[in-house]
Image (cartoon, rainbow, N blue to C red; front, side, top):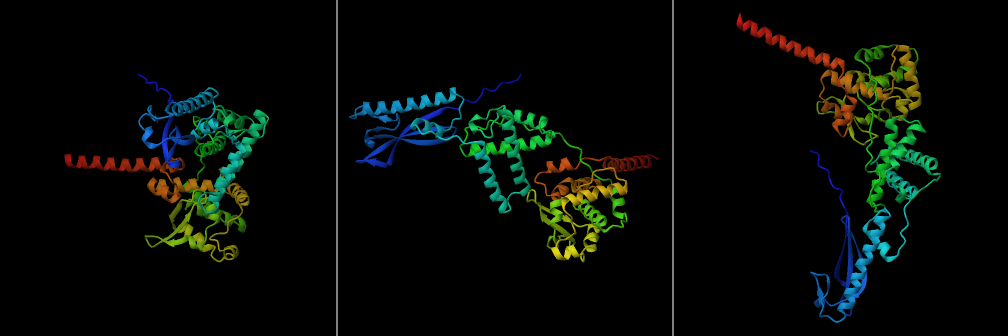
Length: 421
């Protein structure tokens, strides 16, 4: 039997208390405290009373006190007025916080924050974290692009360039998704990426008390697992052994093969220097670097092939002048030359450093029985779940495991037959 959960009803609580730090003629001030959604604010009632005349339990002035009726009536009016403002905000489906209730009571017109202000504030703070190496530059670029997408959506849907955060309803996220898929013709995963960033920003708005609740919180970002290209061992070896007459193709091929055996992405291999090569716990050479994307450390023991590639370019002019580990082209040229290399070698796959990274996760490591926990560490992933996306079980892996199992079973059968004979 399915149990239907009742929606949580948030209530406002108003308490009265004496503030001894704010006294007049030896009489502490009476304050009203508004508590809503675990947050609280105080309001001055402009009433004062001696401590001996205050009933702390009932939160009012004792009846035998002079002016008790007048003061208590004023406190009841304050409580009723606050309740009136609360009921009004609920009826209008406006955002509610303790601070908003206080401002409504005091007649302070709190300025609604806009989408533009949210993006400016979030982008500025994120940029500061990028400057100290705590966040990635590429994510900052994605935040900027998200803003451009949202502005285009606002212009298309509402014929405006900006709206207040209070105007954002639950339908905003699914409408934005539809717009990105149909008008901008983005893939599902790209659309989800921008909505995910917007959801984070709206959470930031609630944390700053600009909104009572995140209206996008109920939208679940759904992803379609993409086909991740990888090379087989035979393809890797064919590329590695291929002789090129053009130096630029040989250099790009070597950097690509280096990535296949280390799992490094383009931005990371671009910034590698000799300082990133250290002696590992086994006494061998390791390449160690924090990922540009996540700032997580990647520590990869160097196998013979990448060591050979490093040695091949130690006297290369570019390597000497820039003090980089390998001669890496711009991303555009690099990917362009990889297309040319794939065509020359008869490989009908889209080659990028992402292809190399996936090849490292599957062909180079998992198919050679490297545990996925180890692969995850070498790829610099925060969670092993991320590694599982990269590292799918391949037919070669299944074949190797079943051959090993077949050998064990065959050995056990032979042992039984031997004992029975």
